[in-house]
Each structure stands twice: as C-alpha cells, then as structure tokens.
Figure 1 (cartoon, rainbow, N blue to C red):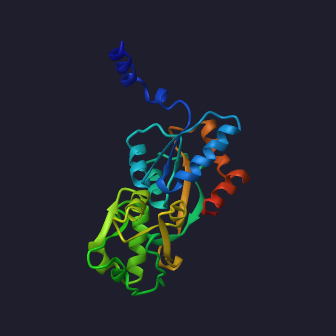
Figure 2 (figure 1 turned 120 degrees about the vertical axis):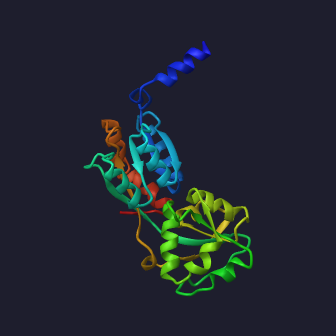
Figure 3 (figure 1 turned 90 degrees about the horizontal axis):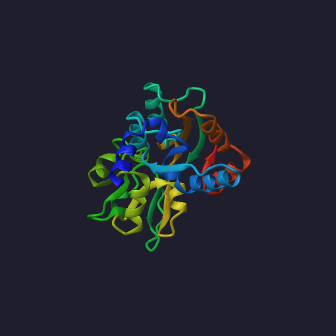
Length: 249
C-alpha cells in the first residue's frame, strides 16, 4: 500500500501538486512573510506554503517547473530573468519593499565603522578572518555587497576573503556563531538577531537600490494568488513590513 501511494505521488500532475497557494520568497523576507501569512489565515484563508531561500535558487526552481503561485525576489535581476522566460504574469509585477545594506559584527564584540572609501575593512577582519555575505556570483546580497565594496575601493583586497554563502541568512549565521568576524547582510536581517550588531550602514550611493519585486507566476496565476499579492499591500501587511524594518514603497 505504501509503495502504491508513493507511485501515485510521483505520477501526480504539476497542477495537482500546485493546488493551494505556494509562495517562494527571498530568505530576508522570512520573518515578515510568516507574520503576514498568519494574518492571511486569520482573515479566513488556508495557510500558504512558504519556501525561503536565495532569490537565484528560487527563480531557477520556478524555471525548472516548480509549482509556485507568488514569487518575491530580493533584487530585480532574478525577477527580470523570469520575465525573459515568460514565467511571470506581466500585469502583476510590483516593487513593494526596500532595505539597507549593513556591516554586522558579533554582538559581544561591538564596533562602529565609518563606511567610506578606503575604510579599513581588512583591519576589522584581522589577519585570518573572513567576510560573510551571499555568493556574489548569484545571491542578491552578495551582488549588492560586491557593488558597494568596488565603489568604496575595497573589493580587490577583500574578495579573496569572502565567505560566500547560499543566502543572506546563512551569512548572518556565520557571524552569529563567531565563525566570521564580520558580514554584509540586510538591515532587517540584523534586526532579527540578538547575536549580531550593526557596525555601519553602506551608503545608498555605493550600490543599486535594494528592492523587492513581487509577482504572480504565469502557471500559478489564480484568483487566490492575486488576492494574496494584493493582501501584501494592505495597511495591516504594511504595518508588519515596517515593524520588521523594511522600507515600504
């Protein structure tokens, strides 16, 4: 009987697997999105299935056919990629949020850094320390971090010492555990952790704006998906975004 059930699951159509509401969202949205999902349920809806990770990983999964209704990216690049592949319902894309790019250090070793061209980041890292952030090759926070470090004239010195992670929360964890003396994450990620403190905020002029485009996928375009996307902009949801430290567009 168990074998039969397993085979039935394997043979299930993508449409069957996609029943209900599935949301793929950037890792930095984890806490706020869970709060909003709870609010959605309290308003009389079924709980959505939430999946968090790097925007690049989630976008690739959507491209490979993952049954998803709503996608929330931490940058424009990966939403643009899905648009090029005709995988987004074009009238649904909207930028809802913004964020800060910050330098964090362990809370038990707080420092303040004046982030400006040529500041002594390698001195902060020490002789062997590494700088934790998302993989600059594809993870949005790492892409923003590389932009900022290049703008500030620090990339060539720091690049060999990057501890590249799969998403922003993994970078945060390295600093929380003391495995990296510093990391570059979003301001909202620093806010949810008691184990790190913000050493400085990168100037907005040093990197592209940190924006979060949201959209309904073409294959997951249902009335429920559009209703959930609209719900993310309601006053109650906006209160949650703001409380979690996001800049509401």
